[in-house]
Image 1 (cartoon, rainbow, N blue to C red):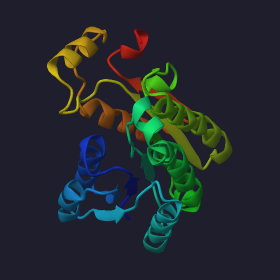
Image 2 (image 1 turned 180 degrees about the horizontal axis):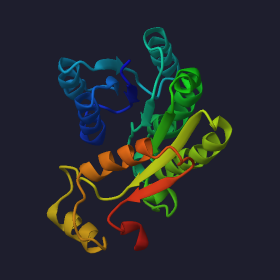
Image 3 (image 1 turned 180 degrees about the vertical axis):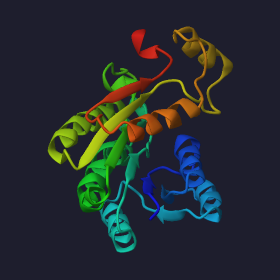
Length: 235
């Protein structure tokens, strides 16, 4: 019986590369996406199962959970990776964006963990990994809602680790400057790297390696690992 993983936000960047890595390892991968299916279409060509859901819509989350429960006998790994990134001006000017920040980073992970609890318990060592942020502990004043939502997810990691033990383990990864976005200009990149002790862009492989570390060490729950090149030491 193959292992089963569900990755939210699987169409790009870390979610996409993690899905590919797990497919290479023989996992059955459920790949969630919101609006853009381009990356997920490539994953589907490799055998992944695409799942569309707008996490700002609670009914859509429930529908996705129902679909997975109809198809899967167990889930070995749930990675809550989906994200939306809005600054203060974005959410101040648009209530829908404010609600989306909390829906994507807090409500959706909560509903997925609780809704798929039975499938995670059925696995030999069910594991949830929440992708939080180094700013969940040291919030940026420019992204107050985003940092608050990520802090909520960090807190839920601890609470679920306590409540779901011993059948399900729950851990978190706090990424730092792993992969710049195309809109990050040269000055921004130089500033961030100058404020990062290891002075390099980490890339996605360290994140994937950390997922494997949590998976392969069955004595870890309620833990959070910073994958940030030391950046949290300076913010």
